[in-house]
Length: 374
Image 1: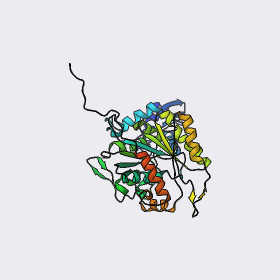
Image 2: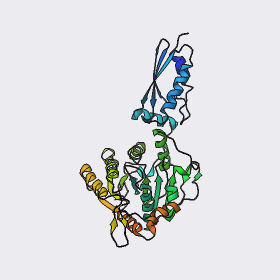
Image 3: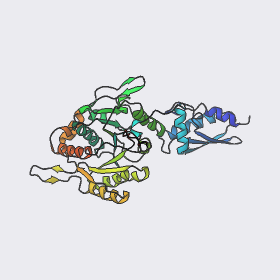
């Protein structure tokens, strides 16, 4: 029996994407089929080049096509979708319905959006986000935090949220954390201890839902706890919130500073603005008033200087946060130290005052004036 393209496509229609749970043929992941006698060549397009389930999909395709009568060998070529193909896939997954409006992306929005990012993990980015949020709220500002660190979420614990979000007619009501901060995180929607294994389109859709389907209300500031690096989430945030500003967190260590610089330099490609650098774990205060620089010195200044040169405008070093046991203890208890007393609290409170001085935007705001008719 000769092998036909229809038989091969029928076999491929039985292969489902392991995350989206729809046939890869429906998702336009099959880019081509070539048949040479009993040899079948199939090209599959992954949603991202670094898909963690690449081997699973490849093995499923080989098994399904190999079971077709007359097939003697199967060669699977794995590629990746381009931006247009990913956009078409998102539209298909959404059922062709118009996307809900993201209020913070509208011209009339007065909410200041700050994406807190870092080049690598372990520099205390989430701690800075949680404490900055609490300190801004303590100044009387209305603050929300979106935990965009999908794989390594920790904001719910650090801000002491104690219950899951409520859903009213499809609208998510964010829980209130320390200091009255509104909080949304993927950690509120998955069982304890369960890992989240998503690729680009799923990440994008989750972020979009957090922004469009959550009732944030009228916020002065929305802080976004970003994952480290410059991957899918950073790109999606730039697309969904082009007006977002970037706050870079690093440590004094040279290795951390080098990767932090790369995280900030993405702004030149996404046309966002880096508002400053925060150096965490800068020093350990000593009883005699001196400073013990456990992780070296100069990392924050280096990032500030190099980003200033690279971006063409001043990127200041806004704060150097000392090592403080109370900072760690507060994060574990869900009680941010920034609203209490201590060396770290003092610096974080000062950082919040610096950032809180920026007025809410007026871009696109109707001023209620009209031209005089002669």
